[in-house]
Length: 425
Image 1: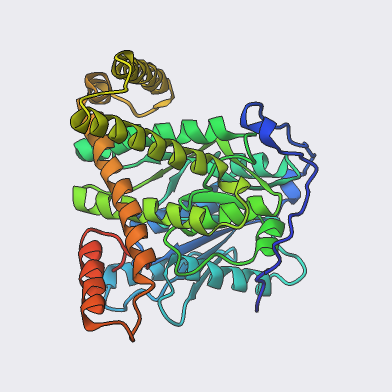
Image 2 (image 1 turned 45 degrees about the horizontal axis):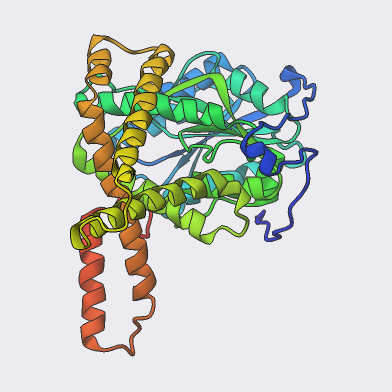
């Protein structure tokens, strides 16, 4: 069954969003809805699921009496005995509200989601769900999570998706996971701050998001073979006129990378995937905040490099003496504002303890962490430049050129940069 939509027409939804909304948040149209009559379906793509997946399914059923759960086994290898046992336990749950389906071949996350959507839209017939929740298979929720997500989504008639608040389940594992726990609080704050500005936050994250079923049917399926399908589908929702939000009281926890290598590869996928969304988007409005961020990053980097080069090779000639001091003062001011804001954000951190306060106050660990993520971003730009140049190299090109491209691909892949969705490679 196909439900893919190919039209690029912008559909107005009663909210006039323009340049003013970069400074003043838009006010969305509110609507009444009956929570008891709202049909919701939870879609969980799973590959080598663990006990957290079983716990997630049980919690969804226990705390949401009317929800239907569809687990998509993305062709988990039969030799993974523990995962197969978990899937069998889910199948054995005595409830007609649970379905486990298996993809014919491994399709990765976006493909598994599409397979599940085809099943939902085919099996439900005319009585389609109002809300479809997509969840990672290692997410932990609380009793009010789904209820608050659905309420935040359905009370705004032009809202296409609402994401949860992200928290780190394994944040006490080591310093790296604690740093990610602190970072996720910043993610949540950014999404909340983006509400009403240019149709809402940049990304409805794949960890846990509630989609209006009508919006999903309109924009079509998730983009397969894309590095970050959640950002890509968010941009398409906005391009069709849907706004997106973050639900303040919908909390969920996930497992984050516990070693530097895994984190680097995850962030390489995130950063390069985000750049490709911006690079390929038809309408700039859905990615406007990201576009401003990239422009500001490169403008700052170029300005500093030009200043350094002129001082090195021209002895600072033509540069007013106050300019370097002004740059230093502005940088210190920016740092001070950032530092105070980070301390203020700690009030939102439910799981904080003395070690988290020590990390935040001391600055150095977060500075080193942020610097490493900046390197990941710069590497993504270099990889994009390399892939753009390598498109000109074909089978008819010289053996030397083809060899250079092969060596470059190998080097970038070793560093975690790839154009194929990469967590299972």
